[in-house]
Length: 342
Image 1 (cartoon, rainbow, N blue to C red):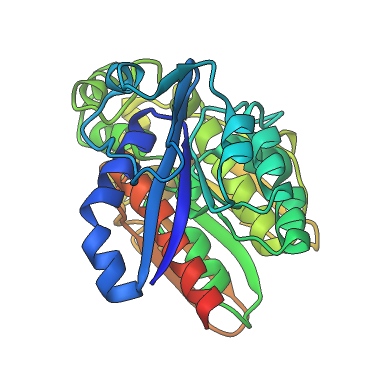
Image 2: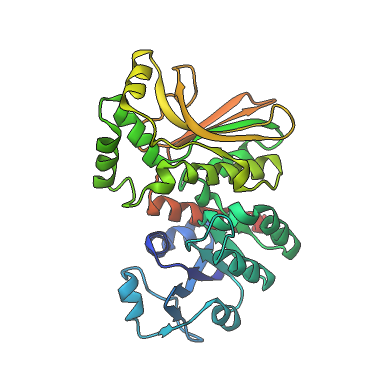
């Protein structure tokens, strides 16, 4: 059985969910896929733990950030360089916060990991928005795996469908409801709540962040759209190329008027390639019942691809929480190692 070192960078909600999932799925990974992953390092901003030579895989499944800091092997200030120097290359699982314009601090770490022969799986949107083209090119040059499906909608398999299921077809447009918070708010507004009431309910249910600015402003959807567009259309566009309008100016009366006409107000992300150069836009639109994303309600997400040979292909659902993002990263690793074995 293949055994591989795993180093985790980022011990927030997604990172901890990945650690728990790796522990839960240990037997399945062995029996079904013939692979085993040894968690050898876990880092957060203040430091981290690095397994000593000959030590078994780290058992961190029950720890929070404070628990990690209290671990006997915790070293303040421990950084990625110490991990790369101390371990045989394996898989770097990266789930840090990163700026969407610069991709830092994650982007530099991903580049260094690939340069040292590590496979990389990330759930961070920032480095992909900043330099998806360069990262994919470096991965090909170094012969390493680069997985990022969790960054485009948690467990929604948007990247997988576009790259694998639609292989051989030309994708001519992508339309997506890519943010669960805004979709929930607009759904509830269509049912009669005002904007403030719908957003407050989303926060109370844990759907919206305490500071939902990037979500309701349309920027989270814009970053995801940019990543998908650059991926499927082989471009290297930047976030400034996306026209963005959020939902904070949307009114309950607009949502109710749309509902009265049999339509639903949605924050729609569009990448259209009608004129050769892809047009990128995020903004509220009233969808009628014929639209493939009309029935995507509440905190659900979905993406619809128009193609030249396969018609319109739509994918809806996928868990939109830290466990869903963690599952997407684990799936990326499994598929990558399966591909390499075949």
